[in-house]
Image 1 (spheres, rainbow, N blue to C red):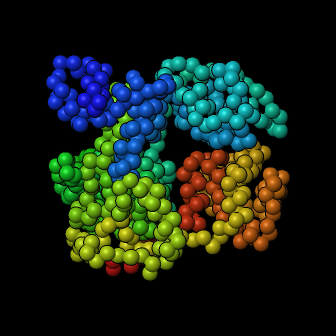
Image 2 (cartoon, rainbow, N blue to C red; image 1 turned 60 degrees about the vertical axis):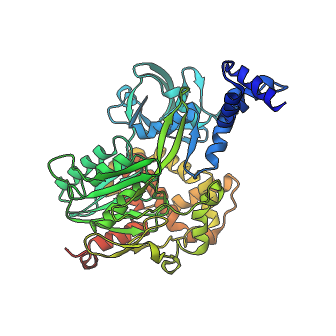
Image 3 (cartoon, one colour; image 1 turned 90 degrees about the horizontal axis):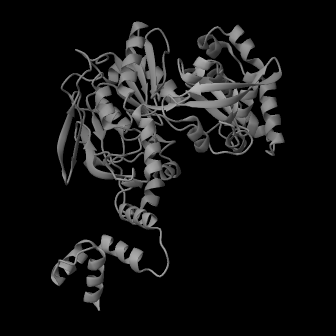
Length: 535
């Protein structure tokens, strides 16, 4: 009976020229393919063959490490787009507010700006399809706005002016729209620059180089590089960026796996010399800084090029190789570990096939007190190494450990703040406030520096926010609101500033409140920096 099954399966697969032993051998070595053929050809009911194959691939990958993953064609496109550096679309940054698309800002020189779309406009129809008030998903809206370069999209816009609403029809010709990796780059003071990155993508290194050049023209001789919440991206982008911070020829990272030979990567500046290989450097990290962020911060720490301030990074030290499949889907298979120049493997421990436990690691850190207390951080002596220049002790195994720990501050975070934020009401109020006061804000504050310094969220504004929350069914809790007043005020001021000026304004406001930034700024301008990293 067993041999008969093999013969039937071999016949299904067109293997009639094989001997029985060859068929049995083939069956042993191709169980997955044979099982799929048996199910699709012999099963009592109809089956979705494509779904069957995808589930089998997912099941195989689930038994491996937490970062080997499969994505279907649509998911693959969505994953690759943010890292590719651009896409074709209309060129707006938007928020959904009360089921309506609200334009935060247009991309400079982009298609929407060219036809006259303004910040504050509401797009209510796209190609005769109503998108306002119908609870349409963001992904569905983006599919309607994006499309091949050179094609047209018709939109109907609701615009408020002097308290009156008007509808305007626009025809926008889609074009390539850049996806930026640098959220903000500005001078904190006459000497200290700040760059915040959100990912490591195809164009990230060029963006960072341009930011460095601009800041140096303004007098920067010390830099705060913000990698908090940066989940990483392309390894090559990290290597390119490190080429502007390290001396040429210094190792940045190496990779090695059972079936992947050791590959060394070295610092190589884009020009004749690095843009910022001397001058004080502080890198901000937290528990969500991962992958390429860890390559960057790890190399800077290993070479004593700068100091790491914040909290232990995520701990992703595995390299994924994309394997495209014919239908546009993709397997991202882990093929190697990456190691910092001192040889640190910073991948945090994991149990194969137990992704749930791996995903709960950040919560475990919170519950153990590690995010709030430096003495709750556990170092493994066997993983201790020394930095390459000053021979300072540093540790591997589970992320990059900061040179200066900064605790997670939860003192102003209350359940009331959580509930108001979860419903998007701070953003809703900010949009409404800007609608009614945009021209007055622009007249009073000539630039975002004036705004950041002088604009104040008033008690009346906060009360209006609380009243909005009450209307939305959130019980007002005066004691908790009082505790969270600094948080409410900071976020509200940042969102208003972003809507009136640009994205960097938000971070100029946020950084005055952020404990990691405050410590980074204090340290980089103190004698203590020189004591920790003497020349």
